[in-house]
Image (cartoon, rainbow, N blue to C red; front, side, top):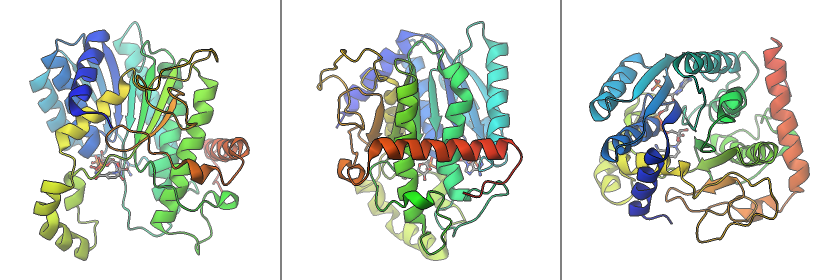
Length: 352
Ligand SMILES: NC(=O)c1ccc[n+]([C@@H]2O[C@H](COP(=O)([O-])OP(=O)(O)OC[C@H]3O[C@@H](n4cnc5c(N)ncnc54)[C@H](OP(=O)(O)O)[C@@H]3O)[C@@H](O)[C@H]2O)c1
Protein backbone atom coordinates (compact mmCIF):
# COMPACT_ATOMS: atom_id res chain seq x y z
CA UNK A 1 0.00 0.00 0.00
CA UNK A 2 1.32 3.43 -0.93
CA UNK A 3 0.58 6.15 1.64
CA UNK A 4 -1.05 9.33 0.37
CA UNK A 5 1.92 11.42 1.55
CA UNK A 6 4.17 9.29 -0.68
CA UNK A 7 1.76 9.83 -3.58
CA UNK A 8 1.96 13.62 -3.24
CA UNK A 9 5.75 13.49 -2.87
CA UNK A 10 6.02 11.38 -6.04
CA UNK A 11 3.84 13.84 -7.95
CA UNK A 12 5.93 16.79 -6.77
CA UNK A 13 9.11 15.01 -7.93
CA UNK A 14 7.44 14.12 -11.24
CA UNK A 15 6.39 17.66 -12.20
CA UNK A 16 9.77 19.07 -11.17
CA UNK A 17 11.67 16.49 -13.22
CA UNK A 18 10.76 17.70 -16.75
CA UNK A 19 7.93 19.25 -18.77
CA UNK A 20 5.26 16.59 -19.21
CA UNK A 21 3.13 15.61 -22.17
CA UNK A 22 0.07 13.71 -21.02
CA UNK A 23 -2.88 12.14 -22.86
CA UNK A 24 -6.19 11.37 -21.16
CA UNK A 25 -8.44 9.11 -23.22
CA UNK A 26 -11.79 9.37 -21.40
CA UNK A 27 -10.59 12.60 -19.75
CA UNK A 28 -13.99 14.33 -20.00
CA UNK A 29 -15.37 12.71 -16.86
CA UNK A 30 -14.65 10.86 -13.63
CA UNK A 31 -11.19 9.48 -12.97
CA UNK A 32 -9.62 10.83 -16.18
CA UNK A 33 -10.79 14.34 -15.28
CA UNK A 34 -9.51 14.00 -11.70
CA UNK A 35 -6.11 12.74 -12.86
CA UNK A 36 -5.61 15.68 -15.20
CA UNK A 37 -6.74 18.02 -12.43
CA UNK A 38 -4.21 16.43 -10.05
CA UNK A 39 -1.42 16.95 -12.56
CA UNK A 40 -2.30 20.62 -13.10
CA UNK A 41 -2.58 21.12 -9.33
CA UNK A 42 0.82 19.48 -8.68
CA UNK A 43 2.40 21.64 -11.39
CA UNK A 44 0.95 24.76 -9.79
CA UNK A 45 1.87 23.81 -6.23
CA UNK A 46 5.43 22.61 -6.90
CA UNK A 47 6.49 24.99 -9.66
CA UNK A 48 6.39 22.27 -12.29
CA UNK A 49 8.40 22.50 -15.48
CA UNK A 50 5.36 22.60 -17.79
CA UNK A 51 2.43 20.58 -19.04
CA UNK A 52 0.82 19.84 -22.38
CA UNK A 53 -2.34 17.78 -22.04
CA UNK A 54 -4.56 16.13 -24.65
CA UNK A 55 -8.08 15.27 -23.51
CA UNK A 56 -10.19 12.84 -25.54
CA UNK A 57 -13.92 12.27 -25.00
CA UNK A 58 -17.40 12.88 -26.37
CA UNK A 59 -18.74 15.68 -24.20
CA UNK A 60 -17.40 19.02 -25.47
CA UNK A 61 -19.13 21.06 -22.74
CA UNK A 62 -17.55 18.95 -20.00
CA UNK A 63 -14.18 19.28 -21.73
CA UNK A 64 -14.48 23.09 -21.81
CA UNK A 65 -15.30 23.16 -18.08
CA UNK A 66 -12.39 20.85 -17.23
CA UNK A 67 -9.97 22.91 -19.30
CA UNK A 68 -11.19 26.11 -17.62
CA UNK A 69 -10.69 24.47 -14.21
CA UNK A 70 -7.15 23.35 -15.10
CA UNK A 71 -6.26 26.75 -16.60
CA UNK A 72 -7.47 28.29 -13.34
CA UNK A 73 -5.08 26.03 -11.43
CA UNK A 74 -2.12 26.11 -13.79
CA UNK A 75 -2.42 28.77 -16.52
CA UNK A 76 1.03 27.93 -17.92
CA UNK A 77 -0.28 24.52 -19.08
CA UNK A 78 -1.47 23.85 -22.62
CA UNK A 79 -4.74 21.95 -22.89
CA UNK A 80 -6.22 20.47 -26.07
CA UNK A 81 -9.59 18.75 -26.45
CA UNK A 82 -10.15 16.17 -29.18
CA UNK A 83 -13.76 15.19 -29.64
CA UNK A 84 -14.62 11.65 -30.64
CA UNK A 85 -18.10 10.16 -30.94
CA UNK A 86 -17.45 6.50 -30.33
CA UNK A 87 -14.20 4.95 -29.20
CA UNK A 88 -15.62 1.43 -29.37
CA UNK A 89 -14.82 1.65 -33.10
CA UNK A 90 -11.16 0.95 -33.84
CA UNK A 91 -11.30 3.19 -36.93
CA UNK A 92 -12.26 6.11 -34.66
CA UNK A 93 -9.41 5.23 -32.29
CA UNK A 94 -7.01 5.38 -35.24
CA UNK A 95 -8.37 8.74 -36.33
CA UNK A 96 -8.04 10.38 -32.92
CA UNK A 97 -4.55 8.94 -32.36
CA UNK A 98 -3.44 10.34 -35.73
CA UNK A 99 -4.86 13.73 -34.66
CA UNK A 100 -2.94 13.63 -31.37
CA UNK A 101 0.31 12.80 -33.16
CA UNK A 102 -0.24 15.57 -35.72
CA UNK A 103 -1.07 18.15 -33.06
CA UNK A 104 1.85 17.19 -30.83
CA UNK A 105 4.23 17.40 -33.82
CA UNK A 106 2.88 20.88 -34.56
CA UNK A 107 3.09 22.04 -30.93
CA UNK A 108 6.60 20.85 -30.12
CA UNK A 109 10.07 20.48 -31.59
CA UNK A 110 10.44 17.52 -29.22
CA UNK A 111 7.16 15.61 -29.79
CA UNK A 112 6.49 12.81 -27.32
CA UNK A 113 4.02 11.37 -24.80
CA UNK A 114 5.21 10.82 -21.23
CA UNK A 115 1.96 9.70 -19.63
CA UNK A 116 -1.00 8.00 -21.27
CA UNK A 117 -4.12 7.32 -19.25
CA UNK A 118 -7.05 5.35 -20.63
CA UNK A 119 -10.30 5.39 -18.66
CA UNK A 120 -12.95 5.26 -21.38
CA UNK A 121 -15.89 3.53 -19.81
CA UNK A 122 -19.15 2.04 -20.86
CA UNK A 123 -22.31 0.48 -19.56
CA UNK A 124 -21.93 -2.62 -17.45
CA UNK A 125 -25.55 -3.60 -18.14
CA UNK A 126 -25.35 -4.50 -21.82
CA UNK A 127 -25.70 -8.00 -23.18
CA UNK A 128 -23.23 -8.86 -25.95
CA UNK A 129 -23.56 -6.06 -28.51
CA UNK A 130 -21.53 -6.32 -31.66
CA UNK A 131 -20.04 -3.20 -33.23
CA UNK A 132 -20.03 -2.87 -37.03
CA UNK A 133 -16.35 -3.93 -36.82
CA UNK A 134 -17.26 -7.26 -35.18
CA UNK A 135 -16.10 -6.62 -31.60
CA UNK A 136 -18.26 -6.69 -28.49
CA UNK A 137 -18.92 -3.01 -27.63
CA UNK A 138 -18.07 -3.34 -23.93
CA UNK A 139 -14.92 -5.35 -24.59
CA UNK A 140 -13.88 -2.91 -27.26
CA UNK A 141 -14.19 0.13 -25.00
CA UNK A 142 -12.37 -1.42 -22.08
CA UNK A 143 -9.84 -3.66 -23.82
CA UNK A 144 -9.41 -3.53 -27.63
CA UNK A 145 -9.67 0.26 -28.04
CA UNK A 146 -7.18 0.74 -25.20
CA UNK A 147 -4.58 -1.64 -26.62
CA UNK A 148 -5.07 -0.01 -30.02
CA UNK A 149 -4.44 3.43 -28.50
CA UNK A 150 -1.12 2.19 -27.08
CA UNK A 151 -0.07 0.65 -30.39
CA UNK A 152 -1.04 3.72 -32.41
CA UNK A 153 0.64 6.17 -30.03
CA UNK A 154 3.86 4.10 -29.77
CA UNK A 155 5.84 6.45 -32.05
CA UNK A 156 5.41 9.24 -29.45
CA UNK A 157 5.47 7.04 -26.33
CA UNK A 158 8.86 5.64 -27.31
CA UNK A 159 10.24 9.19 -27.46
CA UNK A 160 9.45 9.91 -23.81
CA UNK A 161 12.40 10.66 -21.60
CA UNK A 162 10.64 9.44 -18.43
CA UNK A 163 10.24 6.60 -19.82
CA UNK A 164 6.58 6.59 -20.87
CA UNK A 165 3.98 5.42 -18.38
CA UNK A 166 0.77 3.84 -19.69
CA UNK A 167 -2.14 3.45 -17.30
CA UNK A 168 -5.40 1.61 -18.00
CA UNK A 169 -8.03 2.21 -15.34
CA UNK A 170 -10.37 -0.72 -15.10
CA UNK A 171 -10.60 -3.84 -12.96
CA UNK A 172 -7.14 -5.32 -12.31
CA UNK A 173 -7.14 -8.22 -9.87
CA UNK A 174 -10.63 -9.57 -10.65
CA UNK A 175 -9.55 -12.48 -12.83
CA UNK A 176 -12.11 -15.30 -12.83
CA UNK A 177 -12.88 -17.85 -15.58
CA UNK A 178 -11.01 -17.70 -18.88
CA UNK A 179 -12.02 -19.30 -22.19
CA UNK A 180 -8.92 -19.13 -24.43
CA UNK A 181 -10.77 -20.77 -27.34
CA UNK A 182 -13.35 -17.99 -27.36
CA UNK A 183 -11.40 -14.86 -26.45
CA UNK A 184 -14.07 -12.62 -28.07
CA UNK A 185 -16.78 -14.38 -26.03
CA UNK A 186 -18.98 -15.01 -29.07
CA UNK A 187 -20.75 -17.89 -27.35
CA UNK A 188 -23.78 -16.14 -25.85
CA UNK A 189 -24.10 -18.89 -23.26
CA UNK A 190 -20.76 -17.74 -21.82
CA UNK A 191 -21.33 -14.00 -22.08
CA UNK A 192 -22.10 -11.96 -18.99
CA UNK A 193 -20.55 -8.63 -18.07
CA UNK A 194 -18.47 -10.20 -15.29
CA UNK A 195 -17.22 -12.92 -17.67
CA UNK A 196 -16.29 -10.26 -20.24
CA UNK A 197 -14.54 -8.33 -17.47
CA UNK A 198 -12.53 -11.42 -16.52
CA UNK A 199 -11.40 -11.90 -20.14
CA UNK A 200 -10.43 -8.24 -20.44
CA UNK A 201 -8.31 -8.46 -17.29
CA UNK A 202 -6.35 -11.52 -18.44
CA UNK A 203 -5.94 -9.96 -21.87
CA UNK A 204 -4.70 -6.67 -20.38
CA UNK A 205 -1.97 -8.50 -18.46
CA UNK A 206 -0.89 -10.76 -21.31
CA UNK A 207 -0.93 -8.09 -24.06
CA UNK A 208 0.87 -5.58 -21.85
CA UNK A 209 3.54 -8.16 -20.97
CA UNK A 210 4.31 -8.64 -24.68
CA UNK A 211 4.58 -4.87 -25.16
CA UNK A 212 6.92 -4.55 -22.17
CA UNK A 213 9.10 -7.31 -23.57
CA UNK A 214 9.20 -5.66 -27.01
CA UNK A 215 10.08 -2.21 -25.64
CA UNK A 216 12.31 -2.62 -22.56
CA UNK A 217 13.52 0.58 -20.85
CA UNK A 218 10.90 2.51 -22.82
CA UNK A 219 7.44 1.58 -21.63
CA UNK A 220 5.97 0.90 -18.18
CA UNK A 221 2.40 -0.39 -18.28
CA UNK A 222 -0.13 -0.48 -15.46
CA UNK A 223 -3.63 -1.87 -15.18
CA UNK A 224 -5.31 -0.56 -12.02
CA UNK A 225 -8.55 -1.12 -10.16
CA UNK A 226 -9.35 2.40 -8.90
CA UNK A 227 -11.67 1.47 -6.00
CA UNK A 228 -15.09 3.05 -5.80
CA UNK A 229 -14.77 6.63 -7.06
CA UNK A 230 -18.11 8.41 -7.27
CA UNK A 231 -18.29 10.54 -10.41
CA UNK A 232 -20.93 11.78 -12.88
CA UNK A 233 -21.36 8.30 -14.37
CA UNK A 234 -23.06 7.03 -11.18
CA UNK A 235 -25.98 9.42 -11.85
CA UNK A 236 -26.38 8.33 -15.47
CA UNK A 237 -29.82 7.34 -16.77
CA UNK A 238 -28.09 4.33 -18.42
CA UNK A 239 -28.30 2.54 -15.06
CA UNK A 240 -31.45 0.54 -14.31
CA UNK A 241 -33.96 2.19 -11.98
CA UNK A 242 -33.22 -0.19 -9.06
CA UNK A 243 -29.52 0.79 -9.23
CA UNK A 244 -30.31 4.52 -9.21
CA UNK A 245 -32.61 4.15 -6.19
CA UNK A 246 -30.10 1.96 -4.31
CA UNK A 247 -27.28 4.37 -5.13
CA UNK A 248 -29.18 7.40 -3.81
CA UNK A 249 -30.11 5.55 -0.62
CA UNK A 250 -26.63 4.21 0.01
CA UNK A 251 -24.61 7.19 -1.19
CA UNK A 252 -24.20 8.84 2.25
CA UNK A 253 -22.85 5.59 3.74
CA UNK A 254 -20.70 4.76 0.71
CA UNK A 255 -19.35 8.30 0.68
CA UNK A 256 -18.19 8.02 4.26
CA UNK A 257 -16.75 4.53 4.44
CA UNK A 258 -16.12 2.87 1.12
CA UNK A 259 -15.35 5.37 -1.61
CA UNK A 260 -12.01 6.82 -2.63
CA UNK A 261 -12.25 10.63 -2.57
CA UNK A 262 -12.10 11.97 -6.14
CA UNK A 263 -9.06 14.17 -5.70
CA UNK A 264 -7.18 11.40 -3.90
CA UNK A 265 -7.97 9.07 -6.77
CA UNK A 266 -6.65 11.59 -9.31
CA UNK A 267 -3.43 12.08 -7.33
CA UNK A 268 -2.96 8.31 -7.03
CA UNK A 269 -3.42 7.83 -10.79
CA UNK A 270 -0.80 10.49 -11.56
CA UNK A 271 1.66 8.92 -9.13
CA UNK A 272 1.73 5.83 -11.36
CA UNK A 273 4.13 7.86 -13.52
CA UNK A 274 6.70 7.76 -10.71
CA UNK A 275 9.91 5.74 -10.58
CA UNK A 276 8.13 3.28 -8.31
CA UNK A 277 6.72 1.69 -11.51
CA UNK A 278 9.71 1.39 -13.85
CA UNK A 279 9.90 -0.04 -17.37
CA UNK A 280 11.24 -3.56 -17.73
CA UNK A 281 15.06 -3.31 -17.85
CA UNK A 282 16.75 -4.47 -21.07
CA UNK A 283 19.77 -5.52 -19.00
CA UNK A 284 18.79 -8.83 -17.33
CA UNK A 285 21.44 -8.32 -14.64
CA UNK A 286 19.68 -5.15 -13.44
CA UNK A 287 17.81 -6.05 -10.27
CA UNK A 288 15.51 -3.65 -8.45
CA UNK A 289 15.20 -3.69 -4.66
CA UNK A 290 11.75 -4.77 -3.54
CA UNK A 291 11.36 -1.84 -1.15
CA UNK A 292 11.88 0.83 -3.82
CA UNK A 293 9.69 -0.37 -6.70
CA UNK A 294 6.40 -2.19 -7.23
CA UNK A 295 6.16 -5.91 -7.94
CA UNK A 296 5.37 -6.69 -11.57
CA UNK A 297 2.95 -9.23 -13.00
CA UNK A 298 5.71 -11.86 -13.17
CA UNK A 299 6.18 -11.57 -9.39
CA UNK A 300 9.52 -9.70 -9.74
CA UNK A 301 10.18 -6.13 -8.59
CA UNK A 302 10.15 -3.51 -11.34
CA UNK A 303 9.46 -5.87 -14.26
CA UNK A 304 7.48 -3.32 -16.30
CA UNK A 305 3.83 -4.46 -16.12
CA UNK A 306 1.83 -3.80 -12.96
CA UNK A 307 -1.56 -5.07 -11.81
CA UNK A 308 -2.57 -2.77 -8.98
CA UNK A 309 -5.24 -2.23 -6.36
CA UNK A 310 -6.43 1.30 -5.70
CA UNK A 311 -3.66 2.02 -3.18
CA UNK A 312 -0.96 1.19 -5.73
CA UNK A 313 -0.16 -2.28 -4.39
CA UNK A 314 0.34 -5.40 -6.52
CA UNK A 315 -2.96 -7.31 -6.66
CA UNK A 316 -2.28 -9.85 -9.40
CA UNK A 317 -3.97 -13.22 -8.90
CA UNK A 318 -0.85 -15.24 -9.72
CA UNK A 319 -2.69 -18.53 -9.23
CA UNK A 320 -5.13 -17.64 -12.04
CA UNK A 321 -2.24 -17.56 -14.52
CA UNK A 322 -0.75 -20.83 -13.27
CA UNK A 323 -3.65 -22.73 -14.82
CA UNK A 324 -2.16 -22.38 -18.34
CA UNK A 325 1.15 -22.06 -20.14
CA UNK A 326 1.65 -18.31 -19.80
CA UNK A 327 4.11 -17.97 -22.72
CA UNK A 328 1.70 -19.73 -25.05
CA UNK A 329 -1.25 -17.67 -23.79
CA UNK A 330 0.69 -14.44 -24.20
CA UNK A 331 1.27 -15.33 -27.87
CA UNK A 332 -2.36 -16.33 -28.34
CA UNK A 333 -3.74 -13.07 -26.91
CA UNK A 334 -1.23 -11.01 -28.89
CA UNK A 335 -2.06 -12.79 -32.17
CA UNK A 336 -5.82 -12.54 -31.56
CA UNK A 337 -5.70 -8.83 -30.75
CA UNK A 338 -3.35 -7.86 -33.57
CA UNK A 339 -5.42 -9.92 -36.03
CA UNK A 340 -8.57 -8.05 -34.94
CA UNK A 341 -6.77 -4.76 -35.61
CA UNK A 342 -5.50 -5.91 -39.02
CA UNK A 343 -8.88 -7.21 -40.18
CA UNK A 344 -10.66 -4.02 -39.11
CA UNK A 345 -7.99 -1.80 -40.63
CA UNK A 346 -8.48 -3.64 -43.92
CA UNK A 347 -12.16 -2.64 -43.79
CA UNK A 348 -13.48 -6.11 -42.91
CA UNK A 349 -15.46 -7.37 -39.93
CA UNK A 350 -13.57 -9.37 -37.29
CA UNK A 351 -15.26 -12.72 -36.76
CA UNK A 352 -12.86 -14.80 -34.62
N1 LIG B 1 -15.48 5.02 -10.89
C1 LIG B 1 -15.40 3.85 -10.28
O1 LIG B 1 -15.79 3.68 -9.11
C2 LIG B 1 -14.82 2.67 -11.00
C3 LIG B 1 -14.61 1.48 -10.30
C4 LIG B 1 -14.05 0.39 -10.97
C5 LIG B 1 -13.72 0.49 -12.30
N2 LIG B 1 -13.96 1.66 -12.97
C6 LIG B 1 -13.61 1.72 -14.41
O2 LIG B 1 -12.71 2.80 -14.60
C7 LIG B 1 -12.96 3.43 -15.85
C8 LIG B 1 -13.18 4.92 -15.60
O3 LIG B 1 -14.26 5.11 -14.71
P1 LIG B 1 -14.91 6.56 -14.52
O4 LIG B 1 -15.73 6.50 -13.28
O5 LIG B 1 -13.89 7.61 -14.69
O6 LIG B 1 -15.91 6.59 -15.80
P2 LIG B 1 -16.71 7.81 -16.42
O7 LIG B 1 -16.82 8.94 -15.46
O8 LIG B 1 -17.97 7.22 -16.96
O9 LIG B 1 -15.80 8.29 -17.65
C9 LIG B 1 -15.72 7.51 -18.79
C10 LIG B 1 -15.07 8.30 -19.91
O10 LIG B 1 -15.14 7.49 -21.09
C11 LIG B 1 -15.74 8.26 -22.13
N3 LIG B 1 -16.54 7.35 -22.96
C12 LIG B 1 -17.49 6.48 -22.57
N4 LIG B 1 -18.00 5.83 -23.63
C13 LIG B 1 -17.36 6.31 -24.72
C14 LIG B 1 -17.44 6.05 -26.11
N5 LIG B 1 -18.29 5.13 -26.60
N6 LIG B 1 -16.62 6.73 -26.93
C15 LIG B 1 -15.77 7.66 -26.45
N7 LIG B 1 -15.64 7.95 -25.14
C16 LIG B 1 -16.43 7.29 -24.30
C17 LIG B 1 -16.62 9.28 -21.44
O11 LIG B 1 -16.79 10.36 -22.34
P3 LIG B 1 -17.96 11.46 -22.19
O12 LIG B 1 -18.17 11.70 -20.72
O13 LIG B 1 -17.35 12.64 -22.89
O14 LIG B 1 -19.17 10.91 -22.84
C18 LIG B 1 -15.76 9.62 -20.23
O15 LIG B 1 -14.76 10.55 -20.60
C19 LIG B 1 -14.16 2.72 -16.46
O16 LIG B 1 -13.71 1.75 -17.37
C20 LIG B 1 -14.82 2.04 -15.27
O17 LIG B 1 -15.49 0.85 -15.67
C21 LIG B 1 -14.49 2.74 -12.35
